Image (cartoon, rainbow, N blue to C red; front, side, top):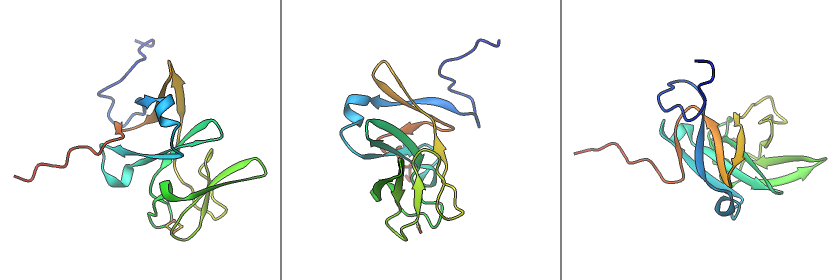
Length: 134
Ligand code: FES
């Protein structure tokens, strides 16, 4: 069926729109960490800057620094986040760095007042339950 759209729950390996939450709440902070069900390394930052949302991998492509804690600056109309660990910068829109590094970015959409991020795994503002140890 070519017309099959909507929330694809079982589409392993495919990107699906993941509901994150209401834009009115998410826009109150400059960055939120979204946990990935795939684990820590796949977590995503949701930035809200100048009235727009941006999503990018939360761990810096250099050595895994926490981009959610980075400063954001605008220069020449380009918004960049600066990694707090070694100060590499990444374009919020494209993920490109002034170095040769590339940070993965994800599409974001607003629908009915809610923010969605297109990502291969479910995303959550709360950590996914830890693997049971007992
Ligand atoms: S870990 Fe981000 S610049 Fe080194």
